[in-house]
Length: 313
Image 1 (cartoon, rainbow, N blue to C red):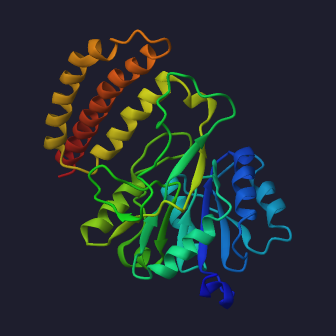
Image 2: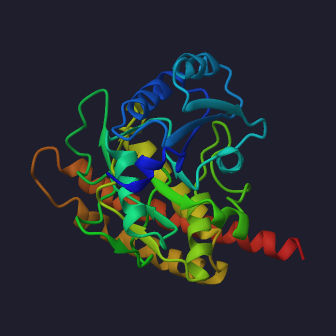
């Protein structure tokens, strides 16, 4: 066992940001309660972002007899506000984020500690996530959809096509004090879907030369809600992902690339549909339409970014 286990001091602060998802929060906290690591080594902070369900009662119930679970309220609406409140409230040296609809593997905290012991100079890292649902996945859904798996080896990310997820990411707290937290104009705000706040922060750290690692043994599983097992939801999510990420890049480059991608995607749709296997046509359709929605999101984000740039001068 790692040396921090002997010291019995809080090393890791696990942050769970939540908004009106009390039933899902239960499963997440239950998984954090059953960790193999000593409860004296890590704490769990639930940041309630203006929930009007029974979230406060859920947190209260879990905190009874559990000295390492506590709740705080963040009144400014938005996931970025909640995440920033979390690291400011933390006692630990390291901040580990997990979504309220995710479940940590039993050795999640312990594997985080093992990596820290072996790599004390690495300040940012994260791991893979699998998927689970309360109903069978449709046969047209791609197998890698709603998952992240970058292989079985620890490695530094190249950030061209490799990322860590907001549902399984860990930071040395000193980085927040040195470089600021998550941008509050990005990310979810209540029921409004938007992405990109963790990506922006990771890109900021990467730009200043901070290595960011992928650790395959630090694993979580993410719930795929029934409403997400829908072609339209997936396409809308693709659009919003690229809209969000386009806000982080140069407008002109993104718009031109998005326009070219859009035209190519339209031309390629007939090719995606050429498959006579049962249950595969809808998947092919998703691949074709996904390219179009990603391109549209990219162009819309670029136009929005350019408009802000022009009219704010």
